[in-house]
Amino acid sequence: MTDQRKKRQKRLHGEATREKLIEATVRILSQEGLGAVSTARLAREVGIVQSGFYAHFDSLEACISVAAERIGERIRASLAEGLELLGSQGAGDYYLVKAQYHRLLTELQQQWVFVELLIRYFRDPSPLGWALSRVQQDLRSDLVSYFTRVVEPLNWPKGGRPQAGFMADLLVSMTLSAVESLRWEPDLDRELVAHLLALQTLNTGKHMVEWMMANKNPPQC
Image (cartoon, rainbow, N blue to C red; front, top):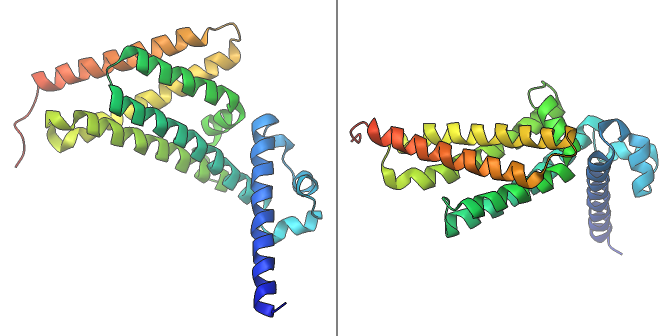
């Protein structure tokens, strides 16, 4: 075996071990919470010595931050799927909007520990806080892009981006609050929550459009 091939195999083995550490962290975070994650636990999960952890990450917090972003990417992909469906089949369809809220609430309930971390730490000046802040900003950015496309035909000043930003912030806040309520009120009906979120979203959008059309400034050259 040549030295180059040995180096390649060593690199691939290292990448595979790092990926196993990330997925183990994702699993523990999702199922047991932040306090259950330790270098000893992760090393045991992937079959390496504890000191070997530091060949892949500088610190436990760095590993947790990457895992948090990984969970965020999956939630973002799920959101993108829902937005694509709404964009192709009708953003104003109550039943479709409710179905997407129901699906998203189900997923976020399954990732409650991550949602709790996001709510508690996304403003924290730490590697985990910065990672969670990026997740929050990416979700907001996806929603802003979606709402900007929705209002584009209305020819609002600045492409409607300020209004799209407001709607994105409102939806993120409402959805996270709804997941908290479902967590702390086990008898709360998810179907009811999805229904109310859909109504609030559609009504707010409708009234915003009406207000903007009534107070529209002349298109800027």
